[in-house]
Amino acid sequence: METWFWNVFGIEERPEFIHHGLLSLESGTLSKSTARRKMQRGELEGWEDPRTWSIQSLKKRGFKPASIRQFIRELGVSLADNKMPLKILYSINRSNIDDESNRYACILNAKAITIEGKDAFKTEVPKHPTLNRGTRTFTMGPNLLIEQKDYETLQAKRKIRLQHLCNIEYEDGT
Image (cartoon, rainbow, N blue to C red; front, side, top):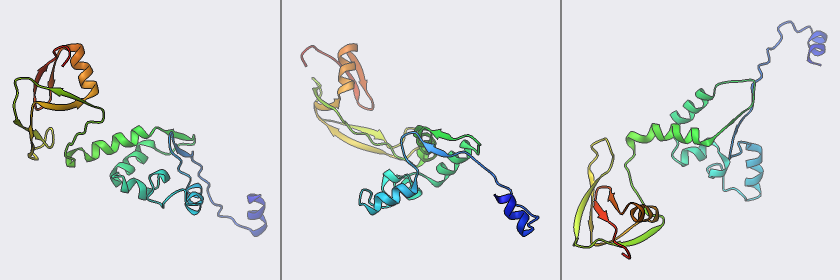
């Protein structure tokens, strides 16, 4: 059809069409028209909603622009459709923010333990494992909460090290 149109109107400089594959994510949808319809129905809160996978939502979640550019560059242009796992984008961003990110931890599945022979004590935990960013100081007593998986490891191995704290030994029933 295009050729007929160009011939009828005498167009000699014909455009060049460049085709490329579709980029999709394994566990997310990139369709902006679908996202817009969901916003109109009130299912999404706007372009910053993490379910849109828009640039705005990635920025709000802490993705660096350099990480997105690197992801696209590594993906490259191809005639074939590309279905990319999100773990690649997360990995790239993690490496780009590593030096500027302090480390914090939380206990999701807590298990209470008592360390016998230990009264209140202080421990210092570095804010970053390799860069000198200072430390956080914690005052602790003999009663601690540890992650359930660490407790199971303690039961199996009978002795473990709690990082930046102390070595502990498991006694049956405690």
